[in-house]
Image (cartoon, rainbow, N blue to C red; front, side, top):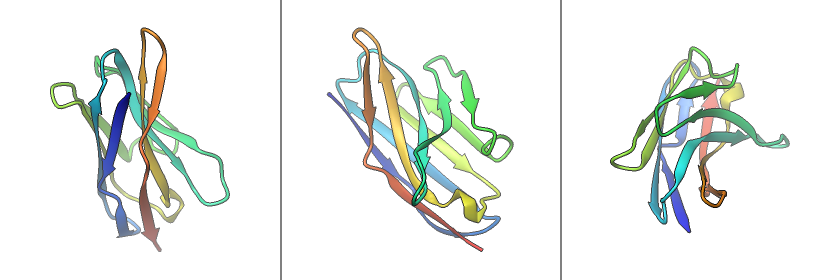
Length: 117
């Protein structure tokens, strides 16, 4: 089993920035894709951004141009820099990791991001 621990959530005004971090530990062998998802109250969990171990990124349309996902394979961490935050970015943000050989997926417990208008 791998464990994912998120940090960096909080309250910020619209237009502000936050940086979320996720650290993976435990059985991290085979982890390829890591990323962030979010779930707003009353809505389904949705993809924010993902990054492969080789640094290839993918972003939801809502995140493009404002969010930047990076990864440090040596430290087994991913960081999501969120700029120009909007009230609609308010959600619980979850770190996710996918591993191969066999396929496994892991989730963090989530960190709350609140953007005030």
